[in-house]
Image (cartoon, rainbow, N blue to C red; front, side, top):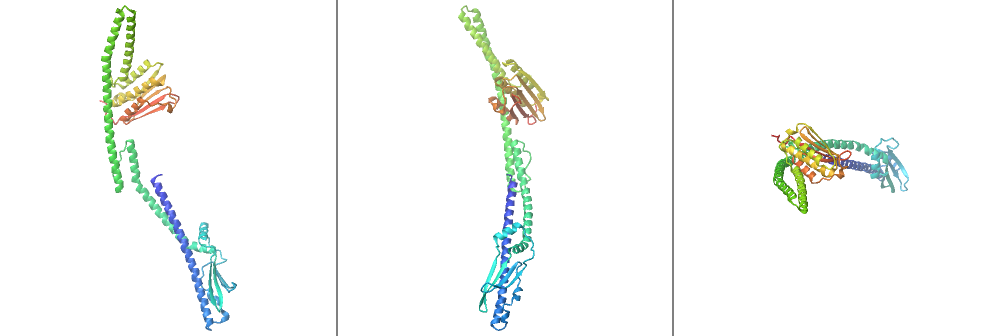
Length: 448
């Protein structure tokens, strides 16, 4: 989940909680106000009846007029309430209602259900008093439907104002969160570019101190990674150069020393075969000649394997064609090859051409040893600022699970990674293996 979404959800939940609390408080406070109005009305009515009773005891009032109900009816009752005067046998003597029978305004169903469940079940208020040596009861009964409508009318405006304030604050907070997270998004994008090796933007425009500290740490990390990358690439290129020099030296030693001695042994075996009279000596000489021939074949293969790049011609195309001819000549099965180029590959940097040559060499070695292919296609194409290398065969590979990344392919990955490139090993549509490598050109000095 994104941070902005998380914060907005928390803001929404907080706003809903505040709204629920506000509505609950408004319901409670208006219910208490309603109850206070009922109690105040009952107190006023009782005072009027008490005054009438006092007047009768003192001979001021007329006894048959007690209770004089008209003054009682002038007391302000909440709408929807009925007041009754009961005698000691609970028989009604007088009754007055306010607002009953009229069609009240409606309130939302959700508000009515919540209010009636929480506060009202047709509330009744009873007050007992004595007059004329008798017990009387003043009873006030409220209509819950009218009570709900009255409370809703008192609550509606406050609820609307509360919702409006919450919406306004929510919009402002959402805008603030969005604005505050823009620098975080810039930092995330910067780290993503840093991971891909292309972090070029600067983060110095951030306003907040904490974000500036994060940005400075990211830029320091970027600089350190770039320095280490350059050091690593320089070391790998030095290693590749040293490896090429070592290959050249080994090939020279094999050719000069090993080949010279083999030629001497072959000459001695030939002389022994011609001079000896014994059949056993001739057989030994023949075995020596056979061993020498096997060693010569092995030497030729090792020289081909160790052949450095660039050769005397300094040509990637000629080197690749030479590798393809060797594959056609040495493969046990009849293998046909195709070679295509796009762009001036001979003007590429030496480091690029050397790695391309090794990729082709390792791919063809894999074909020779394991693929069992009958056709191999090699393509070198300059696409913008990249060199694309594709080696395709129709060998035994049928799916991705049957691709075995051996030592040679791992070496390809290391060589390509040293030049900040990428290499993939994919199964062909029908069967066979596709080796595709992409090497960046512009990060390296041009060939001289």
